Image (cartoon, rainbow, N blue to C red; front, top):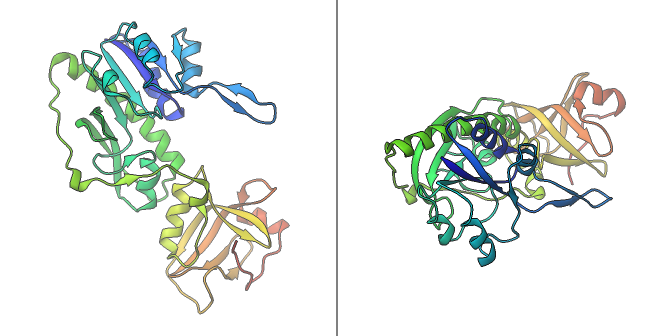
Length: 311
């Protein structure tokens, strides 16, 4: 198949590489978000997908808005049997959706209709799901509402983080997409409509989502610590400085202390009271310091029982 690939972040890279290295498919163009200025220098930086495309001499298009007629006319000049979309970042108009022979196929990081939207991997951890996966979908004009094509499922491990799940699902997405394209060519796909009544929405992650409320139960806070690792990260405050929490364990015991109070300190960790149960903090990062395990942190920062974590 001749494929136009639309994607932007790291998560889309394994799928693009899988297509490039496949003997059955040719990536005729890549469409990604425009370069962004980074750092104090304001230097423009390629998206991860653009980096791969340029390295493989694939033409790259970076429209500000894919709905612009000028871009649509340009897109239709590119040889194309199918458009593959993964974490692209823009909604496609009907004119593009209907252009290729096999339409537009999306690689989505959830078991649809569970977790439609921008951040399905992280929300599956935040909400305590036991499993998740990848769904390939025939795109329509809605937000992740198209017919489901193929699925692959994985268990969410006890200490799964947003970062580890990201890497796991990115590789699975590449495998499932190649299977989907093969079945499409053979006429073996059997699209299944989504049950809208079972859908949930995974909104885009924002930095403030990581602000820890210690009145929550310990299990919920621990999920947020894992699910928001590596971005935006779960955070609180200690003596006027921001404190990121990177790893913690749940303890069912309660004390009579207020939520956020440090109730125990030993040489390797400290324990914080929550609304229900306690958290043993295992890894953290104080503002201006490197990320480290709690044992090393406590060698340089004196924390005492009765201290309170709060913003």
